[in-house]
Length: 353
Image (cartoon, rainbow, N blue to C red; front, side, top):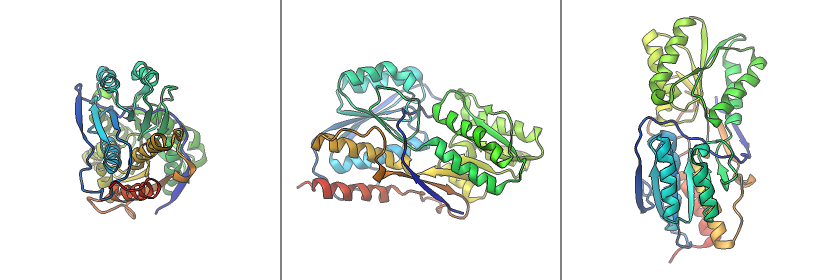
């Protein structure tokens, strides 16, 4: 069953994607998508984008970065990509590196704004716009704009589906991690909406940041062993389905997993009927929206919108076994989004000679 909801996303800063390693990486190159998606080169001023990532190997961040690279490639912009690999000190140093290199703008992917507040202030003082993309996070006055899905709206859509699927009084087991704004939003929404469906929501199990995948598997096992009548899992992290399925196999149980984000690992569980996810085109579209705003700023002196313009409102939908894309395909293909924006830019700004 497929349902779609469109709305405007409010401004906020972004939250980090959870990581395990403690190292940094920087890639300096001219933007290039993994596939030859861009066939039209747009007339645009020469610029360099800095991309700050909290955990670059996270599937959601990979998807967002692919959109940034494809958009920048169409404009001929250079892209400098950093990856903090989940290390809090590295988050500060990688942001500092981009500021020191005097990039023209910085796109932060799954940002932990509280951990880099000093660097955000430095970027603003240096006149470098910072746009957070991909995931909703704690607001920060030194972030110019945020383009990301509204986690509370995704949660409302998912809980509505749960209410259709599950019995009154169903036991719900939330699994999350503490300290992250977007995750707090999906948990708060469950708390607000549970009475409408008569859900019996158990105490949230928080996986440790240092072992977030295995921590979710262990939490799922504990819930399953303690609750033979468990109705469903409510996984706040996009890797939740992938982490919970091993616990279901180990206990030979069939308990549905409701989660967020149609990343490839989650879609495996969706196609098998083990999971249902709420997702948005904002993960892949966010980078294009940021580049679109910067192009308008640098070409026409148009101020950067602090939140997503109404004409670019994001789409939200439920993905289940009935409408999941085939293996190897995405709910929102990068090629389709790339064409949407390159066609727009060619019309508005012309093509390069």
